[in-house]
Length: 162
Image 1 (cartoon, rainbow, N blue to C red):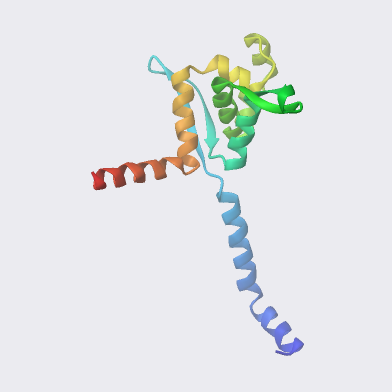
Image 2 (image 1 turned 135 degrees about the vertical axis):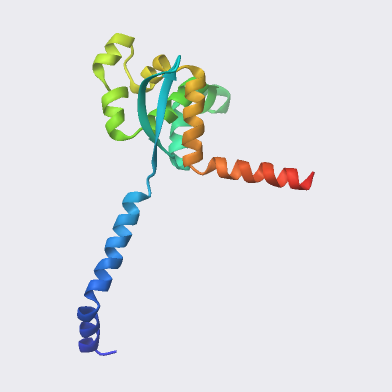
């Protein structure tokens, strides 16, 4: 195909090409799906925040931050995982999945930190949310991450094969 013909085709199809590019950009913006998590106690809504699904690397980062390591002399001072803090892990997942605007207003609010006597956002989550609330929020995050769909299929497959 000659250079002139390519230029002609690009010029004549410019609108279609731009629509395709715009569609891709729009799709990229909508890839991140947020859902509202409401904290309700005694039938009263206290506050709410939006969360999204996390990818494997984000879950792994939370896991690493929640795992204490110690150098083992028997292994040539190699850092070895020693203790996993599941409460910290759960709070880090919620913190990482929270919408940036909500994170700024709620979890990164220095006034709330001072009142709760904490120094990080994940510690505030630990103080503010009850264990069951954290568990429900994590279930929502996992479903947005695609985990719940697989679990439901596994249960269905197990029931079929029983």
